[in-house]
Length: 420
Image (tube, rainbow, N blue to C red; front, side):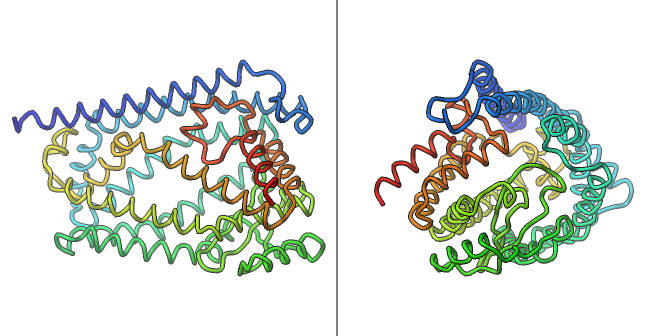
């Protein structure tokens, strides 16, 4: 029976992999079909969205969907080639033949795979940025800026990622049978440190952040935050328009977050609309959504590390993919490449939880800003400026959407405003 275990591992992976690929392909085709057959504006949005915007949204969604199909196929092919061509054990032998062992072998092996994965993804990334996004007027990234961003990204990966990999190896190799618990504690501490460092040390390497200018918008947002008892590190405007015409806003930081508004959002929205968007984001913090998701993420990481601790010494895993013997770097590589297929069915559960949080944040925003119409106008404006899909297939949105559809959100806001 033992000699058949590697074959069973291979068959189990292929079964989940094919199921994952089939589900994603069918859902994407259903969504494309729904958008392709749609005409005009959905009845609940008539009078709010004009036909020209609806037409551009339809074209943009179809273009992105077609690129998504190609990306899905390319990603599947890369995964299968990596796992079954023998390249992974070959790289292991080549690095050992070059004299590497221990932590140096561990770091070099995983770093090379990460660089190769990034390089293989570049063609589709370039097409998405300089062809698709350019065609619809979103791309504002020039080649020089794109190269600069990627150079900084690679430097950060080297400065942060390489020492992190050495630390991971150290915990896995030298902290005993409970290494997964020690590594979990270390990674949590590292994430907290990164949350602190990102807004002040990392984000400014890519964008400029300026305090929001004095005026009606700043006054309204500060009054809103004060009324909610929301302590923060200030209001900032980010030059997102240097790279894209898309609009957004976000908070960064765990305890006293920094509020960041894209300059495109500041330029496009009225004071009441921007205040409603901020009230929605405050709602996420006041309802503890951010902290709950962090706890959920931590629990997931702990479970993954525990499972990894069981798989590291399990020889059939390595034999299934051509390795002669177990190793720490091979275990991480195999779990990274193959593990997602085994848990793909969790995606709709995570999406559903996220949508529930969005509804709760909208209800909070209606109560705080007391401007439900402004919130609806802001959502319609954001959807239009970003050419969001107005006709998603319900199965696709249920599986993938972290936010309710625009029609669903507007209807929920109407119900909330009727109770205040």
